[in-house]
Length: 134
Image (tube, rainbow, N blue to C red; front, side):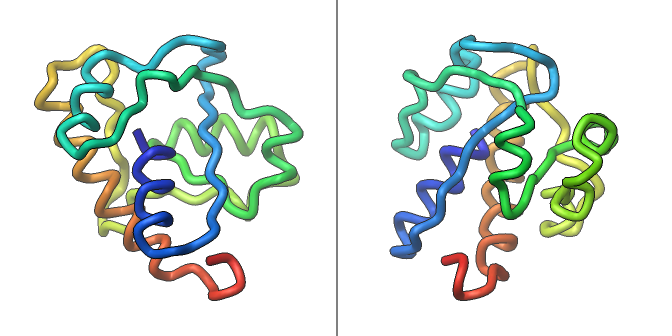
């Protein structure tokens, strides 16, 4: 959801931002959760073609920023990609929160709440980007 929300916001603002999604659980080529698809359909965002992938060494080197939802994601990525430590940021902090709880396996309302939290945090983060990255 975060990747799609960030891409949508960048497009709305006319920014040339490139976003890639990568997980820490090792799920490869899995479709988005049906409740995530529905939550974003509410905003006319279609993620039905999305497929999961993990954060690779190449992706970690490529990224200017690596935004995570939960503290355990940051810990895991810092252990696996120590050279990327300064790039790893908790997305929730841009919304005044500690974490964005992962709604996986939860009811649709949890996905909608997560979507709204992600959207608020992503906008705050992206609005603060240096002009050269927009």
